Length: 182
Image (cartoon, rainbow, N blue to C red):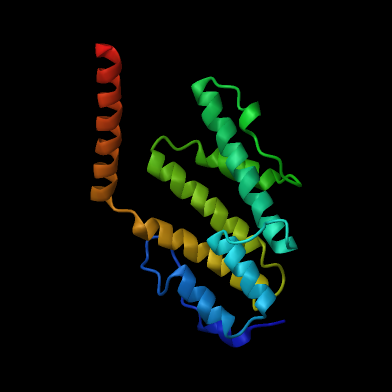
């Protein structure tokens, strides 16, 4: 089914911009137009509610995410000299594009740039799910995935991140001091 009005009404998304609405708000807006089954698919993929084995869209995105995380894991393990085999998760299919995108991301030395590249890869992979009909449910799904990426980057706060990092370092230092005195 085509969702011409809904797709046409969606604001343009770009990483770094303030999202016009939350993921929940997006799903609520879509619920006025799409079927109950499609709402469940959106909730499953965008909010991690439900079983990923329950629908083809959910399985497809889960396989993409799993391969992307596995590829990133292999790169990180290689840098650390660790065997990644026991951490690799199974998924259906294989995409050379995903492997290439992750390999390209790991050429970045700045961790923030690396994460941005991984999210750009997710963005591109979501776009590729749309297929030939830019007004299809797949477009709504891809937009939701991209909205989640925008919201993730928008929610990052340098000061909050530093506070969290300092808390982790302090907690680990205290553990080391306690272990050393025993």
